[in-house]
Amino acid sequence: MDKPVIVALDYADDFECINFLNQFPKNQKLFLKIGLEMFCQFGYPFVKSLRERGYEIFLDLKLHDIPNTVKRTCQMIAKWDVQLLTIHASGGAEMIKAAKAGLAGSNTKLLAVTQLTSLGQTELVNELKVPLKSQDYVTHLAKLAFDNGADGVISSALEVPMIKEVTSQDFLCITPGIRPKTEQAGDQKRVATPSQARSLGSDGIVVGRPITQAKNSLNAYMNIDKEWDK
Ligand SMILES: O=C(O)c1cc(=O)[nH]c(=O)n1[C@@H]1O[C@H](COP(=O)(O)O)[C@@H](O)[C@H]1O
Image (cartoon, rainbow, N blue to C red; front, side, top):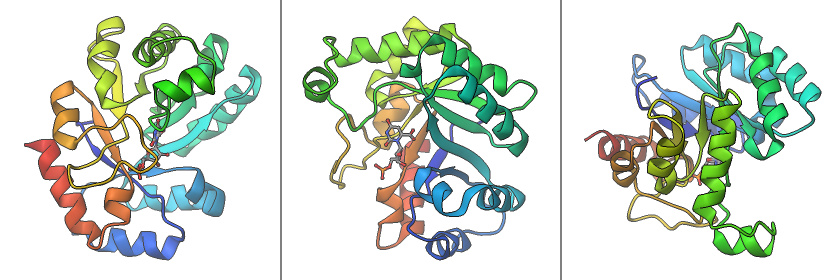
């Protein structure tokens, strides 16, 4: 995996999504995130068809359940040849280990979501009643994920240096909450620009609406890719 810009395919229908993909030259390598919205509509056949077209796939199901259920689900996903899969780190040590065991024998990398990028310090303390600084909660969950076999985490780019320090430089930090300077943060709270994410050490960025809702999605992708890669 070479530091990808991962496009979050949060489209309302498959037609819009295929239209977006068809704008790219045939040989363009793309890393696509299929999240709950599209997976609930189109399920595994959609994943399979995109894999068969040669795209790399991040299956973002954010699993969070008892260890046995997560393990059995991961055993099924292990047969799908996807590159990345998410669970919630807050599911605990046993759940993380179970997910990793379920993926045994596959090349799917396991990423644990730390604190969602839509949650800031206020929500953490007032709503979730976690009496910690956001960055301490994120690094705690990242260490838990690392110690129990995950290949990496999802966090804001702002936390990457701290995560790498308590885990390892090789521990993957994939970062959503990416907003080019001209874009509104919207429901995202812990945001960074593509170039900030790069200089903070992100291993890949996840970008949805700044691309999918843009007037010209292809241009938006190209501009973000250029800012990330320069
Ligand atoms: O797991 C994720 O990908 C994820 C974790 C997180 O903490 N924050 C977050 O935004 N995401 C996903 O990243 C994408 C971000 O989309 P935009 O905010 O539209 O760029 C969405 O598909 C989210 O589901």
